[in-house]
Figure (tube, rainbow, N blue to C red):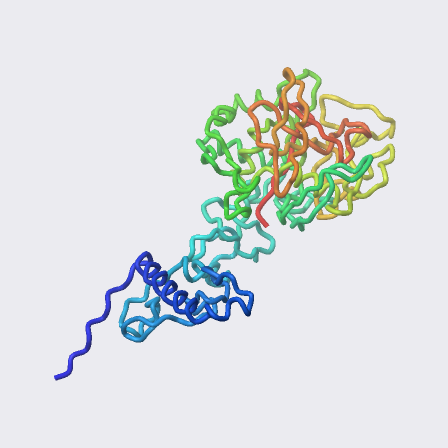
Length: 454
């Protein structure tokens, strides 16, 4: 009776490496003996050692050298089943885990984040049409409307020039490189990756749904709201983005009366869209914390200063205003600015107390940006993620641009933040795409929009 030899036990990665090293030394010793008489003639002083370099170390087939036999006459790596050993891939020797195709990783996922078999974070191709990827935070890989636009209430399906557009539309902004400073010379280059930026500023109607959710107990998860499509899911600044801080929850009020007070605080003659009886207008007098939390609840995140600036300039086109290089005339044909909007006499004069000069979002088509966003110039000045320097409340100034900048942001503070775009009452100097302004409070001119994964 013949007996099959017992299968050799599986070698650990450490043991295989030790045996491979022994084999490498054996081959190198033999080679040195053979080449000793030829070294001077060939100019060879040392033999190449180690690595998948195609040299004479030859311990693995991967680097083109000869494979050292083991006692059974088979390869020393024991990585095939034919020699009776259990197959155990050696990640270090074989170049690391090889991930499957993104189509395999993303099978059954319409979009959004996923993890491949090697543990790497990837973003699945966005196949959503007419919906938002991960609009419902509970289903990040599905196409669904964000919670702020579910149903058909005013301020959710009433945006755009015709007043019948989806207020949660979020067009793609194709990334690239642009200059954050153009005068006197192009300076402060920044690289921005693809992202989506909401076509419209957040309306009062959408924000009402968020307030109801917060009063009902919603709070963002700690660490949420990061740019999860960047740096293997770790976000901005090389993967150090921290996301929502639980200590900020105190700025999200627990009762509707508290919200009513917070959204109408300031001058007695100020314009507050929260109480203007027109939910098509952008929410204003909203704090940075509230808008940040809104964007997280709505399936997105706050845009960085670089991202919002990039969209305003049309990327490498370096536009002075969202629509181009020509300044606006003394009217509201391109933007709600300098109190021209809602002024039937066409004489510049701000009318306070009625939001008369604050336009329903997307109602001014002439000023649309390159990537199909409305009201990037004027209407409400918009919050960004970036922190600013407080110089005695409420005075704040932007911090210097971070350089170099690849998907960068100044980490947010708990005191002041950068805003951009100018408001319905801003003059020419504040509506330029290159004007930086910082705020420390939720004034009536401040609102914003959300960004989302591509």
